[in-house]
Length: 155
Image 1 (cartoon, rainbow, N blue to C red):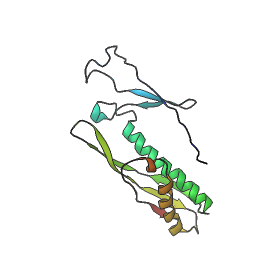
Image 2: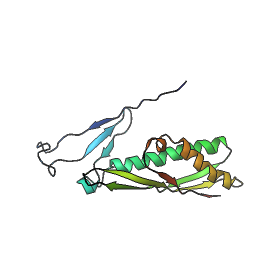
Image 3: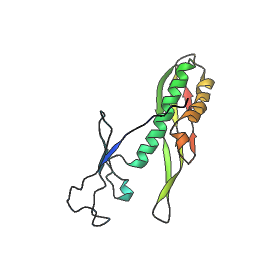
Image 4: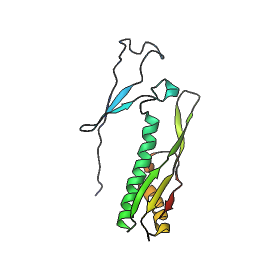
């Protein structure tokens, strides 16, 4: 039996100036992302597209989703394989390329997790579990661009 999971997110944009979208340069890109029972996320577009640099943008959130999903799968796999992870950090990097029609797409993401495992842990196995985590990550399996993982494991 196949399970399905459903997710609901609300996006709220209001024009603070009262002028609406009369011109490309006149309207605010600021909005909030709302999920019931959770803190709101202050969002905007990337500053390259007239957004607020102090707010999260969709591109950053996509990158964060990929990195977070990989980490959660990795921690799960380590737990069930007897690898004691003490610290996990990732400095993910994504590249989006604009197209001539004004659109664009991500052309690649590299996750760079740095993991510290407990003394006596199987470092080679801990490193190999990154590949398995990548193969199971819901988000990585859902995107149409390559997601690479350049992991490091230390004890």
